[in-house]
Image 1: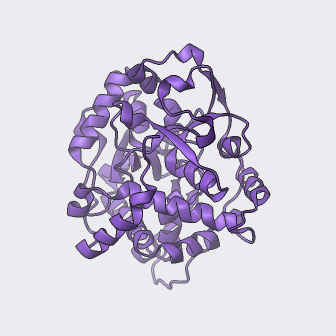
Image 2: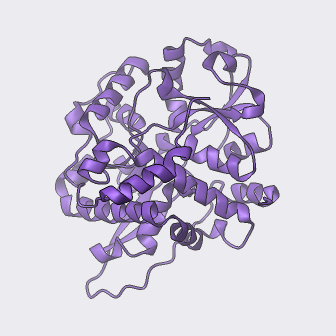
Length: 363
């Protein structure tokens, strides 16, 4: 396939700060008025978050009485405050970042898991030969300061022993970060594998990954979070939201081609253009699926968060990020809203076979 790189870079620019997203409502008739709900993604509306757009487009939330508005995000670090302050009922966030925010006094609780596998790391074009942490010394590495990879950078430095002063860190916004490697403005950047890999692959570029978890930083990744008082006072709302989203997640798992079309129909910035737009969404969905397939989720249902892995994440935050006052682990997450949506054994086996090549691997 010949990819129109210029169209992709124009698309990335269109997703900058202030861009409006278009999410058409499904035509489902209801007698009762819908409850308005706002949620925020942690990042740009890429294929890694197709489950949210599919849940809306297919009417999975509307069937449960919810009218959900989806906003793009500017990094996990910028999800905490608006959810805590009630600007959004729900947000998608990296759970280590959420724990850091909770240690600062923000009242947040994870109510469903999305990615049990952690895709955070430092990424570069394969041609540069950057394959281990020490290779980053003397290089310019780009970050978005609100993203989970930047929040966990001090942990990565501590775990690997590299000299932070020898790494030239530059910051830029999410859209610019996507373009930075494609246009070879920098040799490496912090990011989530599911955000950067699809963009590079769609442009015919190969990627090297230096994954944080390969150096001892064990952590659960993306979760659905809510203000703790919402969890306590509005459990029916939380249950309806989680079930609708998990239906969307399962649909993406089992119907990837149709889900790409639904995503394209939902986000106007991806419409009416080059084949690259579709490939970015397709690869993003594939990576997201690969990050969600772990035995505990198969056994307990989509959204389940393994308590042992959540505790390991707490330990990582305390040990490597030097975060004090992290609340008790059992107050930081709950599995009481998950378990209704499951994938059967035959479907799961097919998913694992299809997803193997999209699992992030050490360079």
